[in-house]
Length: 88
Image (cartoon, rainbow, N blue to C red; front, top):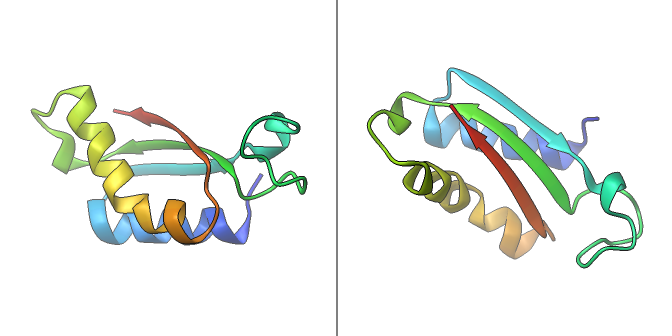
């Protein structure tokens, strides 16, 4: 499922992390009634699957930190509540 916010997040990640693989999925509908859900089923809970040359030699925590840092403005400004991150 794609949303405008997921597309904006993906574009930002492309600019920041130059991924070789990238998928941003809005999974908000799966979290209805959970903390952070906004009642619309969109825009709060995302899964990011990403590979980037910037991850080379980095431990998982450092790779996740790069993704969180790149998406911080979406957390602060756009109501993103949760990120599930899969790095390769």
